[in-house]
Image 1 (cartoon, rainbow, N blue to C red):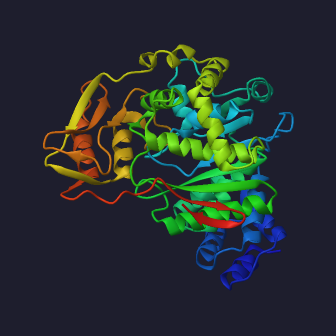
Image 2 (image 1 turned 135 degrees about the vertical axis):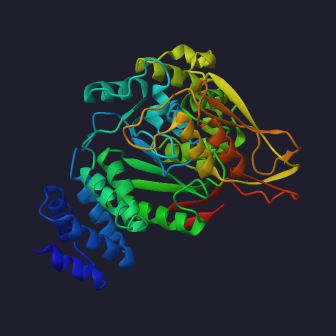
Image 3 (image 1 turned 90 degrees about the horizontal axis):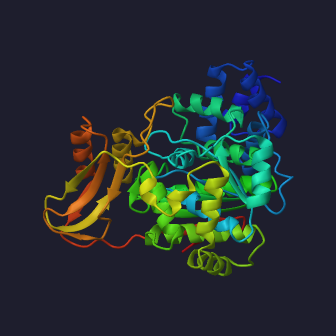
Length: 442
């Protein structure tokens, strides 16, 4: 078998076998297939696409390239949740204890943030003492005892994906839906979950800017899950503006705690209940999404979800008293208000620009090795559809003392907001659900 023949086969529209795709992945990981041949193959895939069977085979080959997490010692159906990334997306902090509180075990590996998208691990580490690195034995033991653990991803989880993504990033082949889908799902499958719920973002703050493209990506990922025997469902949700009101690590933990207390933003609460409901159904604790949402709402109302979060923080060495006093979380040295220049209605918010603004304050990383400040970020005061008068506060910057980036960030936040004379049409938060049976619009 030769790489050049497989490149030609895909270039000409042929379908590669599982054996051929494994040969490509293993050869690339081992260094036997050079970058220039793998990039030629990736470009052929970009133009020719892949069948569901090809995409599933590629995903399995990448998942098998490194560590495989065996969750079999954990009792019950293990359901994982993955978001394609957004601004202000702190759903894992809420969903994990919420779902665990009804008896669906959550054994989750999460990543750190890079660029304008925040990472769950960074957010959890803004809680003093919280440990995101546990031994395999401690991880499994905690999930069996508490029903919940969230740790950092293994360095050797789907290494083929890491290598291929770095190549795609510099060869203009990132946008291939089969390659994106296999990238996401290879890590989820290697992480060992029995079922997977995907939150696929769409809009200005998401990788996929249109609903159609988001649905195509979601369907590709659901098809992979189905092909490899993992129950999979995807929810398409809006990221044309940040989720909730908080952007930044400690700020998002605070908002997550408030949501678990029943006082969270309506959009964040609704999305968490919906994603959590799909997890509960796949976990076998409810027969319908509506039934599962009712069950989860009662766990918010009776305090069980909040109690589970507190137990989770304590179990991983964190200061659990932050649940009772959110002011114990890191707090920024200075607050700077961003004012609106003219009256009207908020017509649009560029979520990606706000994410970048928070990164410039120190809440995120421009490079993998950059350090972050847990205390800084942005609190939004006005969202799309809200009326404003001249001089109203659009957002509050939480900054380091005498931060030289503040002026640039102020301008970036102002420019991210569009004000119009007429109130815009309301854009729904939940757009569609994709399952093995197909796509259903809300």
